[in-house]
Amino acid sequence: MKPANISIIAGVVLMVVGGLFLLDVLNVAETAGYVPALIFAAAGAVFLSVFSRSRENWWAAIPGSVFLGLAAVIGAAQLTGGRSGAGLLFLFMAAGFAAVYLREPANWWALIPCGVMLTLAVIVSLPQELPAMAVPAILFMGLAATFGVLSLVPVRAAGHNARMKWPLIPAAVLAVLGVIFALQATAMLIPADFVVPAVMILAGIALLVYAYYARHDRQHRAPGT
Image (cartoon, rainbow, N blue to C red):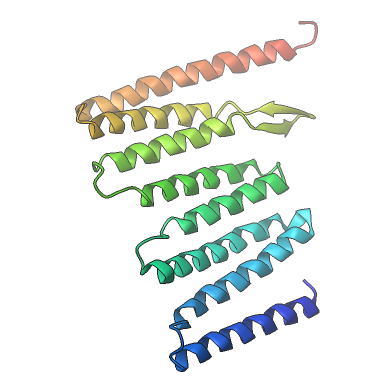
């Protein structure tokens, strides 16, 4: 970023922060609590400006989203008295990782933390009246959905685009765990002794399916077939 642009952002932030402190000192409004949010928002804006300048600056979306998320959380806490806004940080971080992938599709790995952040945003927003098992159920189902989506993403390999199959294995295992916890949350209890062998059997089936499709793809791509 050019020094002139940094000076403009810093000057505007200093003026606004000073104005907020002045309003608080004069008892016009309780605005001092918004100062950290403004500082975090300014830092996030700087990183997003760096992100927007070049494809090689995809990394700047991650700290930028974190700072903007912190600003959103603090601002929401000030407006609502601390009663909401806990999931905003995770939502902004998910958006940051999504931006990393959209800017550079080779960074397919960013979809994993993106899905994790979205899942955590849902979890922290759940009403407290839900059964305790609802939290791990949503966690595992969200992670399963993340790896399921990852298996649909085309990845550049050997000069052509291909879809990865390995994410289907953790997706299947996590989905089974999510269903088990969901059933427990609805009082359809499954003894814990059945969890480990059930997961092992389903993981074995997933490995066999993966091996079958991998062998089928190799035969299909072989010369003369």
